[in-house]
Length: 211
Image (cartoon, rainbow, N blue to C red; front, side, top):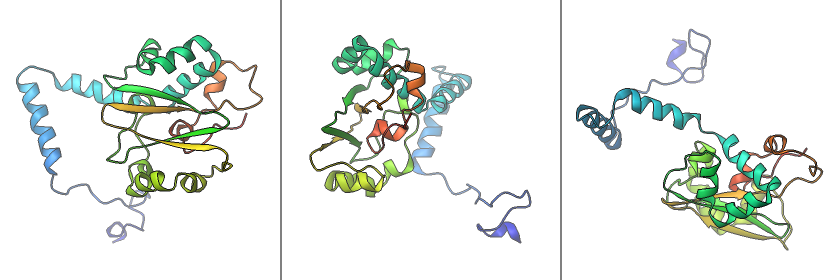
């Protein structure tokens, strides 16, 4: 039958996708057990958990882009972000939790890149879920060993005079790259500038869009 093969269409006309009916992993079983125990003890409710999941799913790179755009246009905020990025982003109304956030401003002679060599630590509260490649072993290892070559594979070419600095995220410390402001945007307001800030530019594997 057509839906028995992953490269065929299902009866609905959509590509076939295998049912996710494998046995639960150890961590999935633990999550269910702890969640049900917290609900049973009255610590939280199913609706409260659902609201938090919805809030987490709503996080996306546009939040980080607004931080970058304000950095570009507000000198006082830029200074505050460099001094304490966690406090500065909270003042913008973003709930970044207890993590220590550090802003990494690029310059014409310095390009910052972010990686998590151990797992996939990532500023999810500002950028949403990390891309799959960020979690891959290839990216985690090669970014440290061959940062310039890795950048080239992302389509970013830098001269040898530009220093490439790699920053390793941890469970309690995350980074956001502040890319160089695109030329020709001197008169742009923050809302318009935010539209140029890409997710990859805040990781350091990309650049802002051209105006």
